[in-house]
Image 1 (cartoon, rainbow, N blue to C red):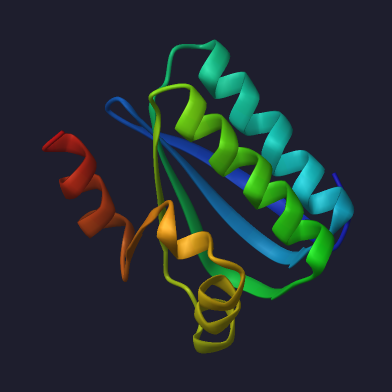
Image 2 (image 1 turned 180 degrees about the horizontal axis):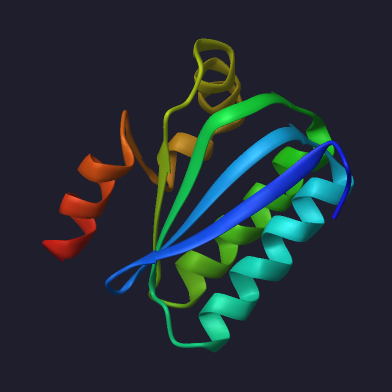
Length: 117
């Protein structure tokens, strides 16, 4: 893990929640993908990525998010993004990330949605 990025991992029932903090670049993206794959291996199918403390996402960070989305589409998994800043929401619109994941303002709303599935 990079000193400018960290992930706090929590579970809420059958939902894996990753609270991302810092600058999502190559090292941060690699860490998120590694933790995501660990949780998939443990049997989780529902995921939330909380971006409330992500200041910046570069193109390599986006590519790791695309890889995670590809896994969700191939593996019957569900992914929600929460707490996107205005600039990150615009970035996700521009690169098409929001087409393949659900977006909610809060983790609670995302959990309620996923628990209803």
